[in-house]
Image 1: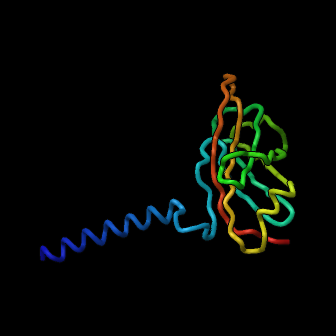
Image 2: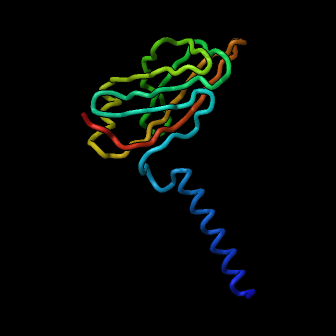
Image 3: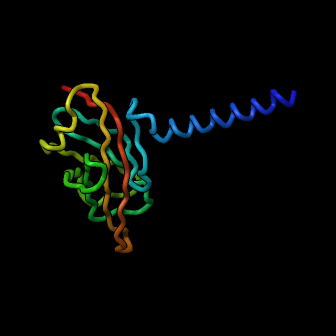
Length: 146
C-alpha cells in the first residue's frame, strides 16, 4: 500500500505540472489564446491576410483616456505597429473598443492560412487621475485567410 501511495503522489505532481505548462502556452501556439491583459481585456480577435483586428473591453472600472494600442511581432523588443482605435481614444468603463491595423509589414507575419502566430501588445492609457499606465499582453493563434 505504501508503494502505491508513493507512485500515486508522484503521478499527481506530474499531471499538475503538465497542466500548468499547457495553460501557460509552453507547448506552442496551438489553437490560440490570450494572456496578460487585465484592465483592457481582449474580447475577440482575428488576424488574416487583410488586417489584424482586436476587440478590447475597458475593465478598469473608470474611463481610460488617451488610449494607444501597439502590436509587435518581434518578441516584444519594439512596438512599431500603432493600431487605429474605434470609436475613439477615451474608453468608458465596461464598453468595447476595436483596434485595427492594416500595416503591410505586420500583415506579412500572417504568412499562410493555419500558420501559427504570436503577437505582443502594449496598451497605454491615462487614468481619470491623470496617471499614465501601460499594460502588456500576448495573443496567440492561427492565421485566417480570406
